[in-house]
Amino acid sequence: MNANAASASTDKVKHGLAAADAAPPSPDWTIDQGWANYTAEEHAVWKTLFERQTKLLAGRACDAFVAGMRDLPMGPDEIPDFRKLSAVLMQQTGWQVVAVPGLVPDEVFFEHLANRRFPAGNFIRKPHELDYLEEPDVFHDVFGHVPMLMNPVFADYIQAYGAGGLKAHRQGMLKNLARVYWYTVEFGLVQQADGLRIYGAGIASSYTESIFCLDDASPNRIRFELERVMRTNYRIDDFQEVYFVLNNLEELLELDRIDFSPIYARIQAQPELQPGDVLDTDQVLHRGTAAYHSAKRHA
Ligand SMILES: C[C@H](O)[C@H](O)[C@H]1CNc2nc(N)[nH]c(=O)c2N1
Ligand SMILES: N[C@@H](Cc1ccccc1)C(=O)O
Ligand SMILES: [Fe+2]
Image 1 (spheres, rainbow, N blue to C red):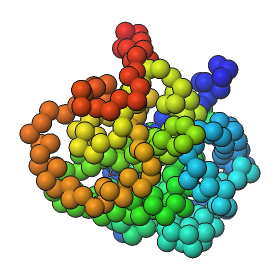
Image 2: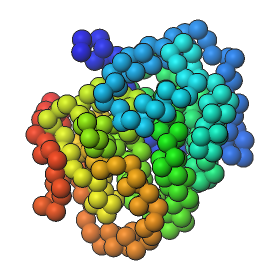
Image 3: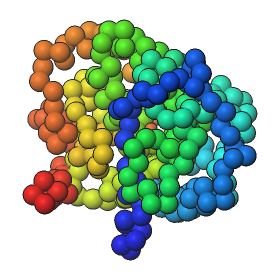
Image 4: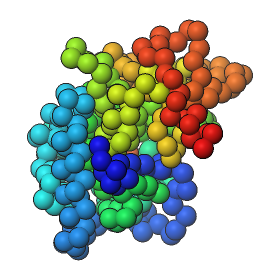
């Protein structure tokens, strides 16, 4: 990848941190997408990101992502109209995409997911912001997350996650549940017969991480195991040090059948794991060299 592509496409999206502290635009934080207000420059940013990422993801994105993208009214020429996306999603899995101005408070976020409404930022990053983004913009939310919502298994998982989020919020266990989200919905990999594939949106919307997560020797790649993942801390604004791998997406429905409350209680008494840790109980698919992150630490 040439230098300017490298510099112009390591978009990292910080997640759910400084959740909105502005006044709510509406009781559920939704706004009108304002599709007619997008400028030619904003559509052009979408086009640049869409074309580059679509080319890169061939052979890297999982089958469900490719199928979802294929069946959605989403292309390079313009930022998608959420109403058109919602019309197809509603038919397929009962989901819709609602516009929000940015990060919304946790309980608002989970309430939407629990009701099959995916809150997507309606703004798009500026041309100079391709490297790093404070908040999930429309490219991360719609290009990265929405195709997977066309998959019935994943659609059920995200809805159940929303309900689980409201429960975890009530129990003060959001930090632990957020890790499960992070290492699946944002940075998850799935093993297919034809190889390791991306399903996490945080990877799918990032040019450089879509390469790093599969090709680089640096990160660990470990089989997903619920309690282990729930104990594992994560990085918010750099490549992950570990990627957790599912055998198939159906494994996610297992998470809906398990009551997390006893697990929350059990891990309270255990030290949290750092992203680079490897346990002797881990099923390690690739033991990383950690070269990327140790180079950064010594830089
Ligand atoms: C854990 C936390 O709830 C999570 O990161 C949420 C917070 N609020 C959010 N709000 C929006 N709009 N999008 C998001 O991805 C999130 N993430
Ligand atoms: N089963 C989890 C909720 C959940 C469902 C699906 C995904 C993640 C979490 C709980 O009891 O809290
Ligand atoms: Fe995201």
